[in-house]
Length: 215
Length: 215
DNA sequence: TAGATTGTTAATCGATTAACAATC
DNA sequence: TAGATTGTTAATCGATTAACAATC
Image (cartoon, rainbow over all chains, first blue to last red; front, top):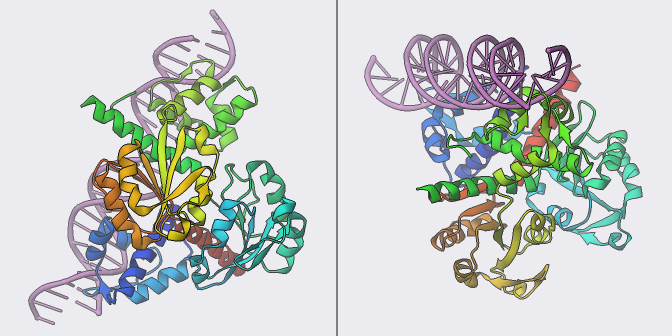
């Protein structure tokens, strides 16, 4: 709605708000105050109001927020009112898992194609989508209005694939490979580094164990 | 090494340092300065030095950091010098993908058991591990020194499973279910909310598109 | 020794929390 | 109208960056 840049800290919290508001809506809750929501989500009411006000006022003094309205507004902010077509590159276990994940469709993310360089995988079906050879990828991206590429390939293949994706007009990459991508300005990248996440867990676990030992 | 609490912002960066240092080591690089590393990783040299100094001095004035030493030290900080046994709960696509993921073993994470409530899955093998019925989970956790449970089940089953895990002494949970877990203090939780991540990508994508339209 | 680069203190920046006037 | 709760400004806190003295 506005021009000012929203910080990634705020963006990062939006999906969680969206999740809670969706649940509340499903439970038939009509209105909620920042105070109530803050208790539910274990964040400060102040932060909630600040976050929402980045996008303009969604609430009403003395009343609070209308759950259904707020839910929809956040959905719009997140771009979930739009349809996005995505392809998965790398038909291994993780690629298949993501392809089979039904919930994405509900949010407007349409699984449109899947590619692998392993000849044994070609023709295999994942949720109705046939795995195609890597060579078919470039044309497919160009001709099928693909917004998002999901990268579930080993890191050795990444540089080459990303270059081709960019050359054919991809706009966003959801990267599960364990490398940092190098893309031109304007291409959005969201990394899911699973092993990084596991290491964080390992750190917190180890630190807690050491602390416990000492006491 | 120290008592002071390290911020999660710093912890979150450690795996990335670890990744870069591992690569440098594999390339045979012996020493590196914070300046060089900062150019490589696209962060400030100041941040690098501050981060490392949270754990005591790893470098040497006038020389920089020894890559191999630093790599190993960060590994230790992350707890990767220890062995962790983990089980996967939920033998669906994502659970299988994680079970098949070989790299975890290299970091000391040992895939030890897999459980599912679907009778059709029982007995199926994922990387040499037989899927067991959910009823076997509690005893297995108690008797096999399991540190980490990986949750790849639908959110409806989560509350019950988490309660059982906690009751049987689990220390850490790697949560892929789309709910926030409620666990007693001292149990470590690391969330991987895939749909949240996709929504963040969607936001940045949509915002960029809107900006472009306007110009 | 001179040059390089860390470790660390100080300055800045941004994000979170608190407070309260505006207003439903 | 009185009470409730937002929107928003101000205060605080923490994280990042800059600067430089210590030292290899």
